[in-house]
Every structure is written in structure tokens, then in C-alpha cells.
Image (cartoon, rainbow, N blue to C red; front, side, top):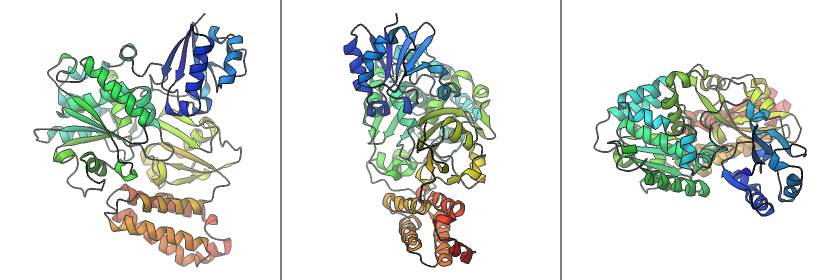
Length: 515
């Protein structure tokens, strides 16, 4: 009889009742050992209970407190599957089995704050390999892997690191951008809550690569649980000689500190983030100089997304060629795709670049939760383009999406059924930009406000041709005149909605008049 049970303590799982379920399991049978893990990413099955058996972990979900007694009676502790909530072997669940888990290899399997678990599951192998190499060799390995920034822009990580390595300064910094603010995204939070040591390990390797001795994690204020777990992980790492004046007994020093963000969406942009990190108002900096030359406190700084840094230990452990073997074109490795919105199987799906959008939405996501037809999918957060079903053959690849006037961004996918009002969605994009703008540049600050007005004019039935011209001109000015991606990318959702769903903007006769 197995008495080892695993229940997620991920924020999404807890929001769905995981803590109550864990307490009920413990009260019902005080002989069981419960390990609280990160989430496997199958959010529609949470709270999920996993039981260790000789065949592997057997899963049950979604479980409520009222189900516990029946599950015990049905032989849950023996891994028996004679219950409606039985899901079989966790790793055989289709949503999970189809994944290629590199970054999320441990998430959901281990105790997030057990360094012993981390070491036993390939943790610190990448750091050990990095400590045996020169800074130049580490940078070359990351460059050769093809790793690109997972936060939105997709900039090659190795090029950024090499710039900081070659910069001359008495102090350099590593900044982890954990200000995950895009709608439909939660990969950063999941990895920080479910496998925090991999983020720390990636930051230490980055420090070794560029000559930095200090790192900061800029964490969004809406992630309190992640903050608690990260700080505990940092203390554990310091107590075990992984962080501090001698990293794993080497001559290299590295320390990490968590800083809580200011609650502004624009602080996800790297220069606004740096301003906020320095204790100032989060306003975009003009570039150049780049943060790689003059970043935090005016010193050369690497600013990388959470998933970018969490990918580094795998690259250093397995090698550049291993990592680069996944993916397509210039998009190498895997991407944790976050599936949300009106969808049956919402959650995190890690896969190599190259799957089509249709495969992700229809086969992996299972279509809409309402059962109605999928009409639009927004990829890349609130600044991402809306794709209609006609574009569902687009491969999940940076260049393929760019060729269709879209963005992968942080790989958040939000699904809409045929009841969605696309004019309302376009207006929301402009309104979002107007509210979140730091106000520094005119195209973003004024253009978005005027954009809301134009959307309202359209709703009121004003002249179609004139309003299309104004909206298009506003988007063009914002795209090419804004200082950062907030104003520069807002035209993507607006123009994609107008291009692919014109019937929501004007009655048919108005469209014909505009043409």
C-alpha cells in the first residue's frame, strides 16, 4: 500500500481548493505522507491528487473535499482506478503525454523547497558544468543553443550576455524580469512557485557568464506566494553554499535579492523595470544606451525573463546541440504555452516550437468550454494580434507569426468563441494602453486615448471610411513612434481585429462604402 500523496500548492490549485483537499486527505488518514508540489499544469483537473504506486503516480481529479472518503473506499491509496475521478497514470494523461518538458521537468513532481529533491532530479548539473568553464565558453554555449528571450521580444540571449561580458565596469548585474503581466500568462509564476531553484541556478550561471556578482528578481506584486517561496529558496541556497561569497566552493560570488514590483504593466518593459528597481517611477528610458551597457544603477545589466533563465541550466547540462535540436527555424528549444480563456483544457503545455495554432487550440486545448465554435484567438497577451480560424495553420514560431502580423510574446493564448465582440476587444486594447501608459511619449499617451474615442465613434455609427482612416493612422503612428512595446504593439490587436473581423466594426453596407 502506498502512503505517499502529492497535491499541488500552486496558486491556481489553491484557488480551486487544493489546501482544503490536502487538509481533508490528512484528517481522513493521518498515516499518509503528503508532499505539496507545483502544478502539473492541467488546471482544469485541479485540485488533483497523485498517489505513488509501483507503476508510477496515479492521478485523481478534480477532487473536492466531499470526494475524499469515496476515493479512500475505492482504493485510492493502492492506486486503484475504480472511481469516476480516476485519471490513470499522470504521465499518460493525453494533455501531459504530448508535451516535451524541459524547463518544467520537475514542476509538479518534487517538493519546490527540497534541495535534496532538486539535486536528485538533475538540479545543479548545469551550474556544476558552468563552474568548470570560462565565461566566454558559457556565453558561446548559450549562443549556440539558439535560446531567445521568452518574455516577448525573442531577442537572442547569447548576444545580450556577450554584450555585458565585454562591457567594462567594476560591477555588473543580473535582473530577472518576473513582472508577468500579460493576460492569459502564468508560466513564470508556475515555475517560481513549483521549481524556484532552477530560476536561481539560471541566474547564477548568467552571473558567471558575464562577471556579475549580484542578481535581482523583480517580482510582480500580485504574486505573493511566489515571493514567499523564492525568498525561502534563496535562504536554503545560501545555507548550502550555492549562493554567497563562494558559489559551490568556487572563487566566484553571487547573491540574489527579491524586489516586489510597483504594480504597473509598463514595468514589464526592461527599462521601466530598471527605473522601478532603482526606486523611481516606472517610466520608459530612451535607448540607447541599452541596459547591457548602462542598466541598473548605470552599470552593465542582463535583463532576462524567468523562463529564459530557467532554460539555461538545461542548456549547460545537456549541451547547446541538445537544446537546439528542438524547435524550428530560428525558434529553438521549447516554449511553455499557456492556454486560457474560453477553452476546455486550460493550462500550461510545454512543447518544441513548430506546432500549429490549430493543433494547440483544437487538439490540446479541446476547443471552447462553451462548446460554441472558436472565432478568435489572441496570442501574446493584451498587445497580441487576434487570429481567426483561417490562420490556424500558422506554426508556433517567432518568424511565422511575425509574417502574419502577429506576436508570440510570452506565449499566452486566449480563446474566444463566436459570441465575442471584436470591436469591443479593439477598444479594450486602446483603453488598456491609455490606462497603463507611463505617459512619457506622445504616440502612446495621446494615440491610445484618441483610439478609444474612434472606437466609440464606430460604435455610434459614424462615417465608416473616415473612422477606418483615423484608426489606421493612429495605429501607424503608435507602432513606429512609441518609445516601447506598450504603445508600439497596441496596434496589433486593434488592426488584426479590424482586418480579420470587419463585420463587427460596421454594417455590411458601410464596409462596402469604405472599400
